[in-house]
Image: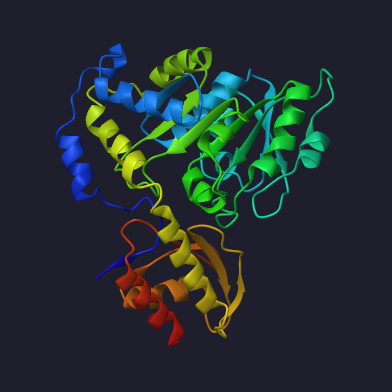
Length: 338
């Protein structure tokens, strides 16, 4: 039995999801004629109280489209130094949009309104124009930490006051919301655009959705096309997204709880020097002698457990839909025996 904790992107569609995909009614989405894609987009937009949405192949694409539509060349985006758009999107902000990036050293991937205010550039010819703020919820490299509405609201108010757009990289937003109990529509009121990923904790094989107002999404469709993201009979994939939103959101609490259970055991082990605060389904910890990240991963693999290194001494586990209670028990036993 292979236990894969590399990421929550490793999941396979459930039987119910596969049935929904096989039964999907499809058309050509580039012409706007795929009814299942249209239904997914309408569902996602309504979920967050927005006017429209756009189905895309990946979360990197939805984020990069948002950066492109919200900015002009020579602008800059403000975000935490751990942000996915900076760490894991191949410098796309520069490649696609010709913009700079202004990094803030936050706390576990989270920044404050005071930090954003201090980062906004003055209006001089020799400086980029600060025009967009991006928050990531949950923060992957921050160990799955999340913002509450009360933490986001002051940043939203500042952006409105200073005429900056605010985008949410909400790849794992539902992992946060099952913890806070906050409403998706309340989240929607605070952002100009939102990206949600369907192929992480929600368990679909492919896809993310970009959400905003009608004007924003119309511009976004054009940018999606030039990035090569126009799909044809994409309803087979969109059907998986609809199924996931209907059936896989509340169960994310199980993933979060299992990550916390692993953290409790890790905190008692002599070879673990630090465990980041575990709020959702991402668990980041540091190992010390006799292990490095590489040797620890090798030892895990001897027990058919896969994980990933997040630094020379740092490991990441991510729990997910296909990580069962039986697997949890094996992981706890294996790591506890060393």
